[in-house]
Image (tube, rainbow over all chains, first blue to last red; front, side, top):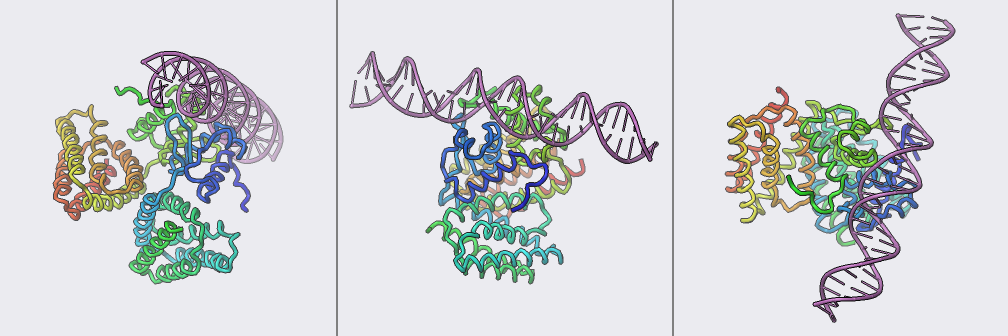
Length: 218
Length: 218
DNA sequence: ATCTATGGTATTTTCGGAAATTTATGATAT
DNA sequence: ATATCATAAATTTCCGAAAATACCATAGAT
């Protein structure tokens, strides 16, 4: 694991921890987040916890109502569909821009990201569930690399926020789609290198649609 | 002035206040936000201020670097273009969905929002600059009403976040485009009632493009 | 039996101050 | 004059406790 970056505050590290715990389902949707309990769990004071929960509330991963504290954002089939549609809209658009502008460095990033993702997929297909977290991280990085030449920081940040919410749904129904997803990733890589926007977008649409269906039925 | 909603916390009201002060330019881009100074300005404790600044950091209206405190998010021509492009992407897509699904209630909301906006535009064109804030609020509400039948809460929230950032640029170069913008709003209303997606999207593109150009040259 | 008041407990919200860190200041040596 | 380093000031980060508010059970009234 990475050494903590210099200048890392307690707030920052705990923020990432709680965020990951929400995305990976250890803090279940709808769960009440009592300050005292969290204090015991994460070893930070209530004020610090409140800073973190406020940030997560802006991220949409926590809801904060009036004077009634915080809870993990609930999930629903409708929300999943909305998040997935939003991801499609943003990612398809960003791919179009990225494919048009990507240089050799970009191709290198894409190939590299796919390679790392692919290794994880092989291990997952082999039955090794211990690398789920890493696998999802590489999935994240691959899709991020595809759009990394889109030229818009704002677009990438908005996409990242939506992607994280999508990721939470994927993790909740933690069943691995395995071979199918791996194939789709390979097709996506090929389309990227061929700069074939239409094909890539069609694949992504199928990719996301299948993920949604998978999440809904699990 | 409105009575504070029940269950309104100091944090919440001060959050809105600071947010508005950033969007309307009273806190200038790049300005260092020292806790002690803010404490004097807004009359809230340091801890409460920190909660608020963390929230605004997630919103992208302030930046928080390491252990060096907070500052108002900087502005740049590139960022304006990116935000504007993002607004176009989200709003065009949302209009398409909304035009297809909007019922009579939706039409009522659109007509009503346009009427209120139009009254403000008349006063602005007449030279009354005192209503700028209201005018921008009605502008916000009109565009929000156009997409209010899109059926996706996630899409509307993401759009709102982007719109607020766009609005800040508009306020920074606070010159009123007046008659032109008013005409465009009327055209947008007509297109909405005719459910003419293509025309509405074309108008919105011009509308935003002109706003960007106006912001860049001011 | 249902509803409203009352008090006690649990939880959240807010504050001021202590510890840690960064930034500014100034003295000394090259 | 410039660089280096110690020291002081300013600022941020973090905590624990006080104040405000919500929640729940019980009792009394309609």
